[in-house]
Image (cartoon, rainbow, N blue to C red; front, side, top):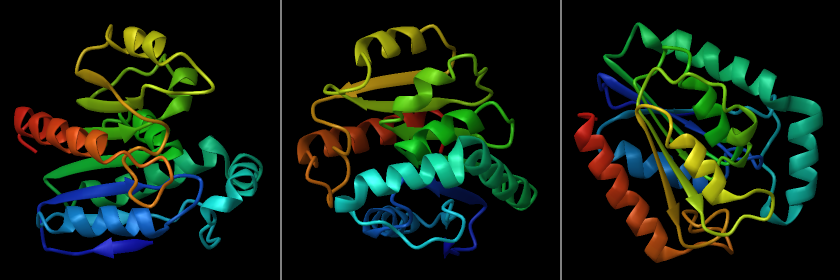
Length: 200
């Protein structure tokens, strides 16, 4: 678990991809902590160390077979239960599988705002009834599903803003081959606007 304590009344729970707490997650946590928020990034890989990007297939198989969404979600819920009483505001940021977990968390009533990047498996959990504002980012290129169709479906929900930005899965990760600086900057601007709207 990675923690930045700024003695804030707001905590951001950062949920990693299949790779675990890698350089990207450390980088995100450091950036967010500069805004004086407390940050918690739980290791959802059952204590296992991070995978490298060239171990994508291994990391994916490990997450699916040894962790799974149910177990990971239970771990995140435990974190949320533990922090809820200590903070005025609880936000969740997630990337890929972490974005899908953030989406699931939006139904719990334990968080106040959720932001997710390229949560492709959100499409498997469209029955979720969100209880907090949610901002979702998707790339315009996805191999496994139709982005426009998913965004169209999500537009039927209250308090959900779904955005499509140029690039591939990983466009907001400066350590990824798919990194797209322009789209990453646009995402940051949209997050700031969303945060202002909901007084983050």
